[in-house]
Length: 104
Image (cartoon, rainbow, N blue to C red):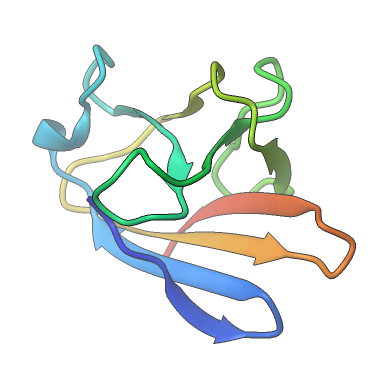
């Protein structure tokens, strides 16, 4: 579990160092499949997945749209063991939510 930290103006971030045990949900090494939850440690709140499964986040790429669709995991490939990454989630006043992944 990674907890997002509120930065400012609807921006939340978390930084972590990838290890192979983080490839849960049946993913192969170097891949993480996950959802964002509004209630830490519980599926009782809203969970956000990828809006378009064909448009998964790519390192250093543009932020991708995520939404509260229950069935589509966010799937990021290309993680390298002992490398540090940052996930940024931005929530706009209009209600859109985006996610970006980058190596730091």
